[in-house]
Amino acid sequence: MLSSGGGSGSCSKDMAVELGDEPHVLVVDDSLIDRKLVERLFKNSACKVTTAENALRAVEYLRLGNDTLEGTESSILKEVPVIIMSSENIPTRISQCLEEGAKMFMLKPLKRSDVKQLKWHLMKCRN
Image 1 (cartoon, one colour):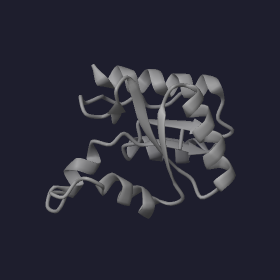
Image 2 (cartoon, one colour):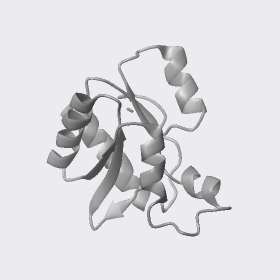
Image 3 (cartoon, helix red, strand yellow):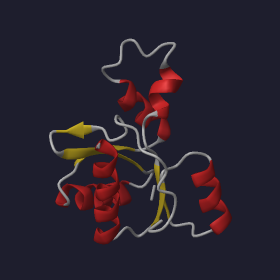
């Protein structure tokens, strides 16, 4: 889901789903091992983490607690910042993801410095 460079995009007040002072990150990856590794990196960086094995499950998590989602679904989901993390280092694919609305693109394997950069970006979005 995440490029050490890449599009910073604009931030809206509601972009960072938060719990207290911790950003809340939803990690979606089809690999259990990758999900666990990324989850640990984020937790070690003081982030609350929810994991999902696919996009369908991620959308289900985003819908939890939103009983009024019908009719406003697309506008609510547009407020969720999307960070792409992939092992595919293909410039055209990275550009496409950023052009289509991803806020960042980060390359696997994820490093602690990548997580710190992402956390800084999410915290900046709160202001």
